[in-house]
Image (cartoon, helix red, strand yellow):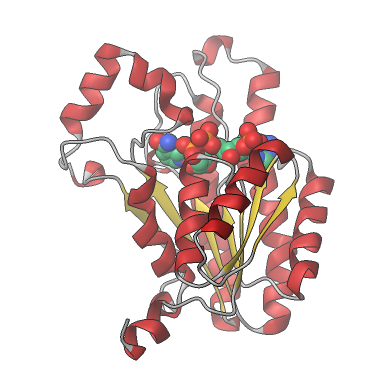
Length: 259
Ligand code: NAP
């Protein structure tokens, strides 16, 4: 890689935490950040699912370190501890990717309080708690990159996922609110809104032949997204290449929003 590209996109010496990185989009983004030179912290609720991801990154021999910290993003105190432990690992945290997210599919009229609360707790309250704790640390250092994982339902209402749509709409607004306060202080806050990606999160849609066909027919790229489609966007938003980008919700959706 040329020196120019290394300076713009390289992440050597940076520490990144990706929440919900035991699988799916989070795992792909954590590996991409490691490939760009960052030391990475893998997170999820289950230690047994984290160890293989750490081993996979270590086996790539990238000259970076990988570390697992289990924590439930639906528990504010646990999120606070996660950020404190992430900072303590190497004394600094440079990149926070708020990726952990859940979805509950039930028609709005029957959507239970339990489903609503579970989604809002992880997708919104956990994200704000993590942003606040990591943001304080980054502001004190005068630098940092926060990337929140939004959704097409940051812009659209979706069908039978009212809590998810509400939480992801809020993630877009939170991204802008934090950017307004922190952009002048060296901390970039942006979001990625993935389109329809093949992960466990969308298994129900993939299995529904009618919905799956409808979705595919509306994607200009002509295919569902894969976790690897997140790699370029996350490296860009985590690196110096995006230093003048702030408060932006970037779609990685095969062109869906342009249609
Ligand atoms: P996924 O395959 O279901 O993975 C979700 C990840 O989050 C897992 O690592 C899971 O680990 C972790 N997680 C779930 N609840 C957690 C909690 N309470 N605390 C800590 N970690 C938790 O989903 P994905 O498709 O990769 O989705 C990742 C993000 O992208 C989510 O925010 C999702 O809303 C968003 N997104 C996805 C799509 C898509 O099409 N797939 C589209 C738009 C946005 P454990 O279960 O082991 O804890």
